[in-house]
Length: 153
Ligand code: ADP
Ligand code: MG
Image 1 (spheres, helix red, strand yellow):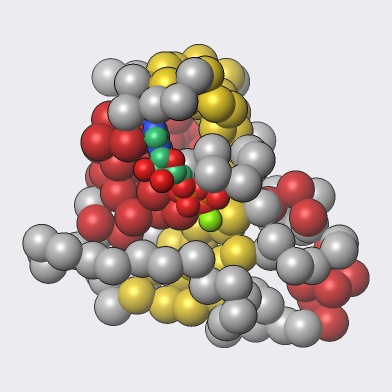
Image 2 (image 1 turned 90 degrees about the vertical axis):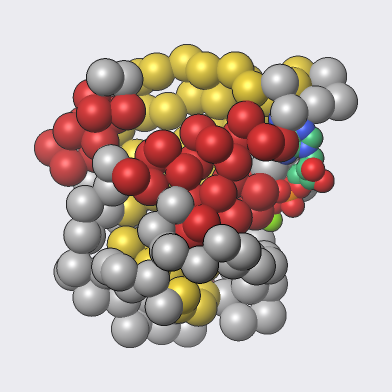
Protein backbone atom coordinates (compact mmCIF):
# COMPACT_ATOMS: atom_id res chain seq x y z
CA UNK A 1 0.00 0.00 0.00
CA UNK A 2 1.39 3.39 -1.06
CA UNK A 3 0.14 6.95 -0.45
CA UNK A 4 1.52 10.04 -2.18
CA UNK A 5 1.25 13.38 -0.39
CA UNK A 6 2.58 16.90 -0.77
CA UNK A 7 3.39 19.51 1.87
CA UNK A 8 3.90 23.21 1.11
CA UNK A 9 5.99 24.14 4.16
CA UNK A 10 7.55 22.66 7.30
CA UNK A 11 4.43 23.32 9.39
CA UNK A 12 2.45 21.00 7.11
CA UNK A 13 5.18 18.36 7.32
CA UNK A 14 5.10 18.55 11.15
CA UNK A 15 1.31 18.30 11.09
CA UNK A 16 1.41 15.21 8.86
CA UNK A 17 3.96 13.61 11.21
CA UNK A 18 1.79 14.47 14.21
CA UNK A 19 -1.19 12.76 12.55
CA UNK A 20 0.95 9.72 11.78
CA UNK A 21 2.01 9.58 15.44
CA UNK A 22 -1.65 9.56 16.47
CA UNK A 23 -2.25 6.37 14.43
CA UNK A 24 1.00 4.64 15.43
CA UNK A 25 0.37 1.78 17.87
CA UNK A 26 2.88 0.50 20.44
CA UNK A 27 5.57 -1.31 18.46
CA UNK A 28 5.05 0.88 15.37
CA UNK A 29 8.11 1.50 13.20
CA UNK A 30 8.65 4.54 10.93
CA UNK A 31 11.58 4.66 8.51
CA UNK A 32 12.59 8.03 7.01
CA UNK A 33 14.63 8.52 3.87
CA UNK A 34 15.50 11.51 1.71
CA UNK A 35 18.46 13.79 0.98
CA UNK A 36 20.14 16.02 3.56
CA UNK A 37 17.69 18.84 4.31
CA UNK A 38 14.67 16.96 2.95
CA UNK A 39 12.93 17.17 6.33
CA UNK A 40 13.55 13.91 8.21
CA UNK A 41 14.39 15.65 11.50
CA UNK A 42 11.54 18.13 11.01
CA UNK A 43 9.19 15.17 10.49
CA UNK A 44 10.53 13.52 13.65
CA UNK A 45 9.88 16.73 15.63
CA UNK A 46 6.22 16.63 14.61
CA UNK A 47 6.01 12.90 15.29
CA UNK A 48 7.45 13.09 18.81
CA UNK A 49 5.37 16.22 19.48
CA UNK A 50 2.29 14.15 18.62
CA UNK A 51 3.11 11.60 21.31
CA UNK A 52 3.67 13.87 24.27
CA UNK A 53 1.58 16.27 26.29
CA UNK A 54 4.47 18.71 26.46
CA UNK A 55 3.95 21.64 24.14
CA UNK A 56 7.52 21.93 22.99
CA UNK A 57 9.66 18.91 22.33
CA UNK A 58 13.07 19.66 20.98
CA UNK A 59 14.27 16.98 18.66
CA UNK A 60 17.76 17.14 17.30
CA UNK A 61 19.34 14.68 14.99
CA UNK A 62 21.06 12.11 17.23
CA UNK A 63 24.08 12.15 14.96
CA UNK A 64 26.44 11.23 17.78
CA UNK A 65 24.14 9.20 20.00
CA UNK A 66 22.83 7.12 17.03
CA UNK A 67 19.66 6.33 18.96
CA UNK A 68 17.95 7.99 21.90
CA UNK A 69 14.62 7.77 23.71
CA UNK A 70 11.97 10.35 24.57
CA UNK A 71 9.80 10.14 27.67
CA UNK A 72 6.62 9.73 25.67
CA UNK A 73 3.93 7.11 26.16
CA UNK A 74 4.64 4.71 24.54
CA UNK A 75 8.35 5.45 24.64
CA UNK A 76 9.71 6.59 21.28
CA UNK A 77 13.24 5.96 20.06
CA UNK A 78 14.82 8.25 17.45
CA UNK A 79 17.75 6.84 15.49
CA UNK A 80 19.95 8.42 12.83
CA UNK A 81 21.97 5.97 10.72
CA UNK A 82 23.68 8.63 8.57
CA UNK A 83 27.22 7.69 9.56
CA UNK A 84 26.70 3.94 9.29
CA UNK A 85 27.41 1.83 6.23
CA UNK A 86 24.99 -1.07 6.47
CA UNK A 87 23.01 -3.52 8.61
CA UNK A 88 26.24 -5.05 9.98
CA UNK A 89 27.26 -1.66 11.45
CA UNK A 90 23.81 -1.19 12.98
CA UNK A 91 23.88 -4.62 14.60
CA UNK A 92 27.52 -4.47 15.68
CA UNK A 93 27.01 -1.11 17.39
CA UNK A 94 23.80 -2.32 19.03
CA UNK A 95 21.91 0.75 17.81
CA UNK A 96 18.50 -0.81 18.48
CA UNK A 97 19.57 -2.97 21.43
CA UNK A 98 17.40 -1.15 23.99
CA UNK A 99 14.29 -0.87 21.82
CA UNK A 100 11.53 -3.17 23.11
CA UNK A 101 8.67 -4.68 21.08
CA UNK A 102 6.22 -2.15 22.60
CA UNK A 103 8.37 0.91 21.92
CA UNK A 104 7.86 3.11 18.88
CA UNK A 105 10.90 3.58 16.65
CA UNK A 106 11.55 6.34 14.11
CA UNK A 107 14.72 6.11 12.02
CA UNK A 108 16.47 8.72 9.84
CA UNK A 109 18.56 7.44 6.90
CA UNK A 110 16.83 4.06 7.20
CA UNK A 111 18.21 2.96 3.81
CA UNK A 112 21.58 2.50 5.53
CA UNK A 113 20.11 -0.68 7.00
CA UNK A 114 17.81 -2.14 4.34
CA UNK A 115 15.68 -5.06 5.43
CA UNK A 116 16.64 -4.82 9.10
CA UNK A 117 13.14 -3.77 10.19
CA UNK A 118 10.40 -5.75 8.49
CA UNK A 119 6.95 -4.31 9.24
CA UNK A 120 7.52 -0.57 8.91
CA UNK A 121 5.93 2.55 7.49
CA UNK A 122 8.47 3.91 5.04
CA UNK A 123 8.44 7.70 4.48
CA UNK A 124 10.40 9.12 1.56
CA UNK A 125 10.79 12.92 1.54
CA UNK A 126 11.78 14.61 -1.72
CA UNK A 127 12.33 18.32 -2.33
CA UNK A 128 9.93 20.07 -4.65
CA UNK A 129 11.17 23.64 -4.74
CA UNK A 130 12.42 25.38 -1.60
CA UNK A 131 9.48 24.68 0.70
CA UNK A 132 7.54 21.98 -1.11
CA UNK A 133 8.05 18.33 -0.29
CA UNK A 134 6.76 15.23 -2.07
CA UNK A 135 6.13 12.58 0.57
CA UNK A 136 5.69 8.93 -0.35
CA UNK A 137 4.34 6.68 2.39
CA UNK A 138 4.51 2.92 1.94
CA UNK A 139 3.70 0.03 4.24
CA UNK A 140 5.48 -3.33 4.38
CA UNK A 141 3.42 -5.37 6.82
CA UNK A 142 0.13 -5.60 8.73
CA UNK A 143 0.91 -3.00 11.44
CA UNK A 144 2.20 -0.37 9.01
CA UNK A 145 -0.65 -1.07 6.55
CA UNK A 146 -3.15 -0.43 9.31
CA UNK A 147 -1.32 2.83 10.19
CA UNK A 148 -1.54 3.98 6.58
CA UNK A 149 -5.24 3.07 6.36
CA UNK A 150 -6.03 5.04 9.53
CA UNK A 151 -4.00 8.01 8.26
CA UNK A 152 -6.17 8.10 5.13
CA UNK A 153 -9.46 8.12 7.08
P1 ADP B 1 17.01 16.23 7.29
O1 ADP B 1 16.84 15.70 8.68
O2 ADP B 1 16.26 15.41 6.26
O3 ADP B 1 18.44 16.43 6.88
P2 ADP B 1 15.92 18.69 8.38
O4 ADP B 1 14.56 18.37 8.88
O5 ADP B 1 17.03 18.80 9.36
O6 ADP B 1 16.30 17.66 7.20
O7 ADP B 1 15.88 20.06 7.58
C1 ADP B 1 14.87 20.38 6.69
C2 ADP B 1 14.94 21.88 6.40
O8 ADP B 1 14.06 22.22 5.34
C3 ADP B 1 14.55 22.68 7.62
O9 ADP B 1 15.37 23.83 7.67
C4 ADP B 1 13.10 23.06 7.31
O10 ADP B 1 12.73 24.28 7.90
C5 ADP B 1 13.14 23.21 5.79
N1 ADP B 1 11.86 22.97 5.11
C6 ADP B 1 11.33 23.79 4.17
N2 ADP B 1 10.17 23.32 3.70
C7 ADP B 1 9.95 22.14 4.35
C8 ADP B 1 8.89 21.18 4.28
N3 ADP B 1 7.83 21.30 3.44
N4 ADP B 1 8.99 20.09 5.08
C9 ADP B 1 10.05 19.94 5.90
N5 ADP B 1 11.08 20.82 6.02
C10 ADP B 1 11.04 21.92 5.24
MG1 MG C 1 18.23 14.90 10.05
